[in-house]
Image (cartoon, rainbow, N blue to C red; front, side, top):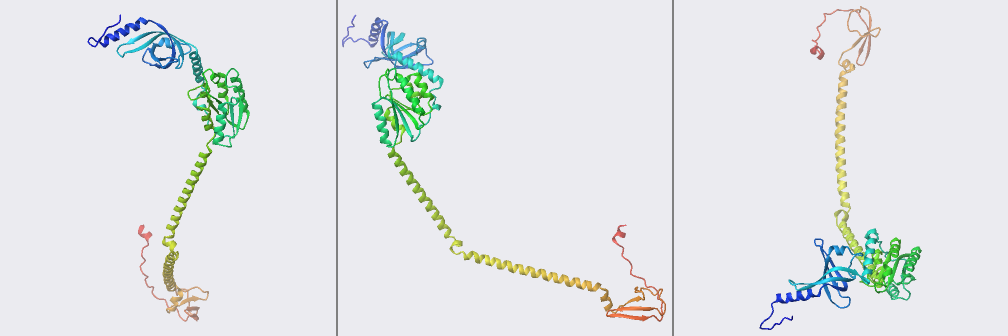
Length: 423
């Protein structure tokens, strides 16, 4: 029954919430069609929270389901999937919100297609086809660029015009293929193999304009993905627009948001490069000027030194040192010569004092018999014996007339030697 209220007798909010809960519960379980806009799965909860959005109108509603139901879906439920849900609506009075509790979920149409693509993506990712370490860098300025696109397409026009405008000397080899439908995958794969065989091609661009998920489905084909993975030449994916994410974007070495973005990535901008060259040249000039100024300052500092201002000062100092050393050498040599002369004189005087001739000069004589033996005693000498007398300046020959024997005189007492003392 309708609830009657007035300004004089308003209904409490709890009554309104209770009436709403009753009306919503009266609806019972219903089948709802929509698109999954958001999935929030919490590890600590057995409930999966989702947002279900109408496929046409801007209407969305919260939806929950058990983790067992969510994990049992095959293919897995992903964001963007279109689904049929058997759910029971419920009203949460505390917050005043309405949510759906799903009892069964079925994926239909595009949602089922997206789910299959997600499953394929997970399998290929598990094989490592999308690994970041496999991505190859693009060349700075390729000799030739391979372009795989549809004939007379806007994507071809965007790539060629933007690339030529950025770098007029860019050279392209364009191969036209079907970019949707059943013939797309074999034609694109064959074109990729043909460009791979060309040694001049250093980068390959696969370009297509925007389209629906069904139109872009060939660029998520497993055969094409594996062919791009095995290619030795870097591949740029330029499929659709920014929101479109075919699997080709994941396996390609570079993912371009649009064909125009791909053209900007594969060739540099000549105007920017010319500006960079000019800036580099100016930096080189500035660095060279700085280096020259520094070296000139160093030369000026060297010139200002006394040794460089008048080099003769150093020579004069060295000349004074040489004169002092020469005088010292002369004095030293003269002193050593004087000492040597004194030593010679002393040794000569000592030799003269020890010479027998000096003894003869003092009036002594050496007496020898006729045989030339020196006579030191009168023993054995008879009267009338012939003798010779050696004096300082000559020799005298004489004959003895008489021989007189004298008493012997005692000699000086001998000083005991060191050996006797030791004994």
